[in-house]
Length: 397
Ligand code: 3PG
Image (tube, rainbow, N blue to C red):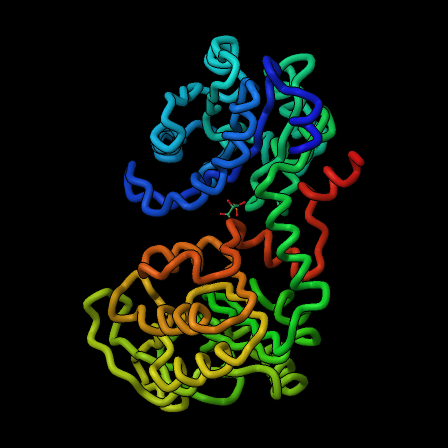
């Protein structure tokens, strides 16, 4: 971004890919963290006089316009935060987009409608994605530049993330640079002890990153729904808790090879059903009664996890420890997060859900060294996978 700014952008159109994929309750944004994280790059460009055209996705629409996935609430929030109107084009590269882009003045910002309303955005076919990228490049016209600042999507080989960067002079935005720098610290030579806490529902989603992390970390703490597959792999009954039966064998193997590093809950909060007002109680992790489901880690587990986290010099946390959206099952996640805040560690929160948990539970954001905007992207980076949206920028050098 600084390279682009030093070239001068006054009067120049700059297409910015941001990650504005925020959680919504109807039209209400329940966590605007990603919108706020996109502001510094936008402001730098507008202050330098650029005409900023933002492109972003929301949710996973089926490749056609769908009002429930409109970016309208995001355009409104952006306008409030920037203190200036942010017009939303009614389409992506059509007449509405053309007229909104033509109306931009120096230092102003417009947002294009959800890029995933066009099926070519996520197509596996290079030519289809390329055709959309051509149209995006034509929309901003000759002399335009592209800034990739949607860290949360850099692991997606999609038209507005990857292909467009091959068609316009492309630059990394401040957010992408900052995120990659932090994650590089974790994959490089992190200060020890290094502890990772992983939650989330599916072992299958996290198996790759667990395997990649185990040789590098001192402790790997398991919470969330996937803890029950680990408990089942140890031979315990898990009642009606989330269970990936097809993952038990690979989980057993992990436990056999790395049992010294893996830390599992010792007690859990079980409920009679999946509901905020479910009947619930704390039981030992190896005594989950039939017909009950674990929805959070219990207080002894929080103490166990907190002790390890407080003594760690580096911590990475991805995935809530329980169903924190229901207050009765939020204590585990709150306890884990609080222990990280209380530690003197270099701490990184990775992921939409865990970042949202920090804010929803009222924890101080500045209690963490870095709160990543990318869940899947940060996990894929830690797993050692190539991030297409970053690789394409590195190819520019
Ligand atoms: C996210 O929410 O992790 C990013 O916005 C990417 O969204 P996706 O998983 O739908 O590609």
